[in-house]
Length: 73
Image (cartoon, rainbow, N blue to C red):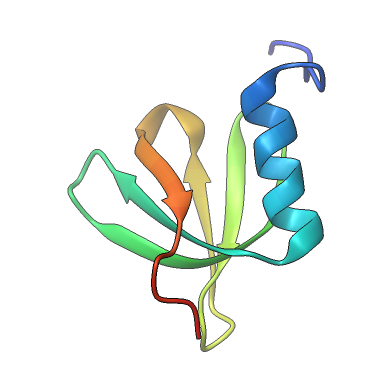
């Protein structure tokens, strides 16, 4: 597995979403749209907690896009 590169802009952006507890939209390759807060990331996955606190692990390779949620709580 590749080493986690904290200097990459994408990793730093996701870390800021985690730190600020910002809600995000994550579209995945199955065409599902997940909305929630990213609670952790590692080199292979992200974990997103939705508004009902259900956690979903998403493989990075399945992500189509990730952006701040335009309609936060």
